[in-house]
Image 1: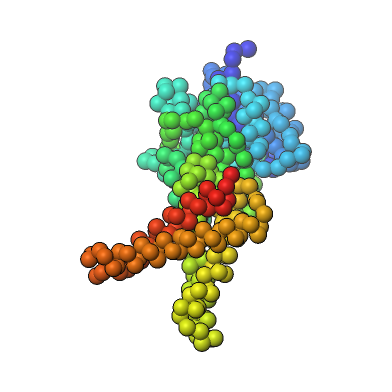
Image 2 (image 1 turned 90 degrees about the horizontal axis):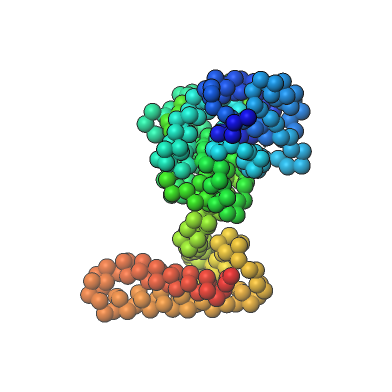
Length: 360
Ligand code: GDD
């Protein structure tokens, strides 16, 4: 038997109707090419195993049935780990990904033009059925935009992708969650030439999509992990800034409330509102921004966060007063000085938080 050239990994859950159809499509498009189809099924109990057994009499297909684990991403990894071919192609079972694109995708890998290829709806020549409702389209677009800075392709959400099997060894620390295993492999593996093959993405005709709201929320968590992996400092800084933004809202609300409802003076209100806001920032930075770092003693960490925040506040205020007192440009542009002060204070706080408060 010749060496297998292409292993097609297909995660399945309750796809008994689609299994023979996808096998037929693949077989029709891969004549004379040694391939294998690996279904990874999460114990659908709908006759999928029997269907694959029947097909295996004519087409090189097998099924791995998992009973202990569930989920599309981990199913794909199970399939890749059991594959024997030189190239891996991952696709859905519901016929939304055209088998006719497999060979053009493999050509791109074989010629060295790309080392990771996705079947893409969003490059020239790509398309999708036009009966997507407004919300589905918006949802898909937002999810795509959120992932674009992680990779250099236009359809990072695609579940149709391929790469050379030995490259899988370069994918360090996979944390497969939700649906976007292709994106994770692309981001974490050592791929320097990602590319796209235009496809027409067809809506499924049989069975149902399993993409639930929970999966979409998992996607956000997954994205956060991928950003942290690819841009560790920038992603911490962005989260630190977001938390600081919400802290600023808390600070302002308390500042105004103390004056409006308790008749306190503005200096006194300012001196009080700092503490709950800084505590809020500490809590959310501990819980979100630096959640992956060591969790040291609450009280000690809170106190050191307050101390560095106070120092940051002094730097912020110092920058503002210095600029508006001595630099003519800022005497007339106080708001720009205020923004610079905030940035200096935030930069300082961020460095202190990374180095001292939430150290690794
Ligand atoms: N083993 C296993 N376990 N397979 C699963 C599971 C699971 O928990 N959930 C879904 N699958 C299989 C389905 O049977 C199908 O073959 C494939 O994974 C895709 O699942 P669908 O539920 O059909 O996905 P979709 O059509 O909503 O989402 C598609 O669009 C996305 C981009 O918009 C898929 O193509 C995604 O891969 C793609 O990223």
